[in-house]
Image 1 (tube, rainbow, N blue to C red):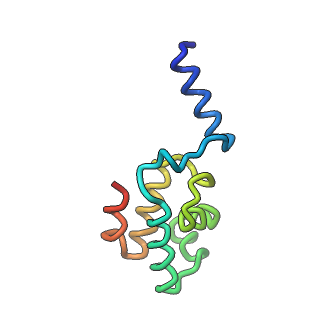
Image 2 (cartoon, rainbow, N blue to C red):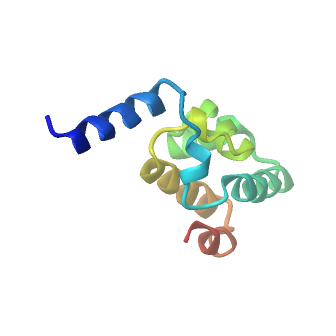
Length: 101
């Protein structure tokens, strides 16, 4: 194994074990996006159970997204997809989408 590969695998292992702060490397502000999603969900009176049934995203993941908890979430590509689906369901994709870039 080359030295570069060793470093890559060490960093990935540290991320999986929670030894590295993922938040510093994330491409968008999940705290802000989470607040937007939570506000829209509460304004519409939609529960976590309803969203879980509609999108097949677990309540644990929904809560982590709304609270900006990167450490409790899967890789960024999945989070971006979840956020897009969630925002679309709440009819706020036009507000959230600019925050994802």
